[in-house]
Length: 284
Image 1 (cartoon, rainbow, N blue to C red):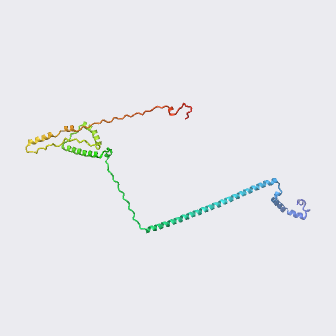
Image 2 (image 1 turned 180 degrees about the vertical axis):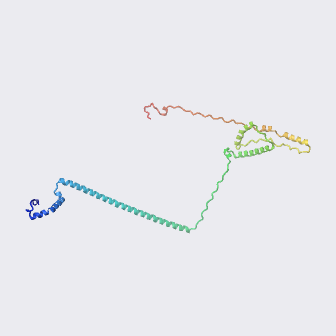
Image 3 (image 1 turned 90 degrees about the vertical axis):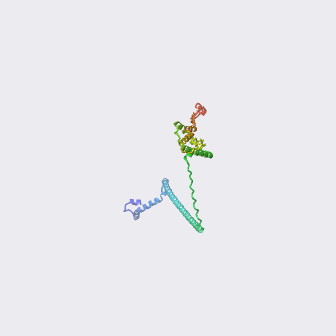
């Protein structure tokens, strides 16, 4: 074909002309055959790199295909688990509804059975009793406890002395107390008020008593009546004798204040406590 192309057209035969016309088709067929069967026409140094590239492409394709298969399997597994969980949930809901229906049926049966039984009267609530309050005197909280017999005797003596004092006040006026006697009697009265219920009071005999003899009946004569009134005044005691007869209050000296004792401290060495700074074996 190459030789026919080099010769002039006049010298070419009919077969050579037909062959030159079919030259493009022949070249295309040869090119296709060379691509398909290149391995038969190439050396080892040309074939190995092409083989390695083909193997890499194939491995990548297989890895992608394997990954797609694993993802598809994981998706199928997830769907199966979700379906199983949904079925389990539906079964639990159905069981709970069935149990609720059975419980409701039992309650209805018990209500019907209770309605047929005779009803008992409901017990009435008990009334709460009100707590009784005891009235206390604030003065009783600051007094020492006493025996019942002594307290009764003290109250009786206190009442008797109170009645006698009222009789004395009604019979004769009492003189005003002297300032020294009043100052001395103030602490005594306070002590007597605190110990009134602890011991019985000493009852002093009143000097303002009625005379033993009754006065003579009045007569028409004037002088004898005046003599009788003078005699009665002489028989009655005077205020001075009443003041002397009254018991004098004893003054008790206040207790001496206690002296505070000073705390005593003993001196100790550092070595006695176990700390020896001069010891080379001692470590802080």
